Length: 63
Ligand SMILES: [Zn+2]
Image (cartoon, rainbow, N blue to C red; front, side, top):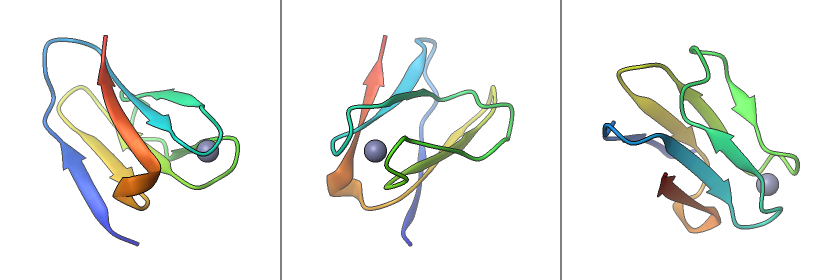
């Protein structure tokens, strides 16, 4: 599985799964969190957001 670390901005970072539409908040306190369909996983903290899954299956949203 490819891994990608999204640059952390001052905005809140969310990762949205394109398969199920689930939005996962980037700061998961280093706890691996999967979306409903388990296509993507997010593992993040205050400093970084690590995303596990195919890049075509998710998008990064800053709110
Ligand atoms: Zn999903």
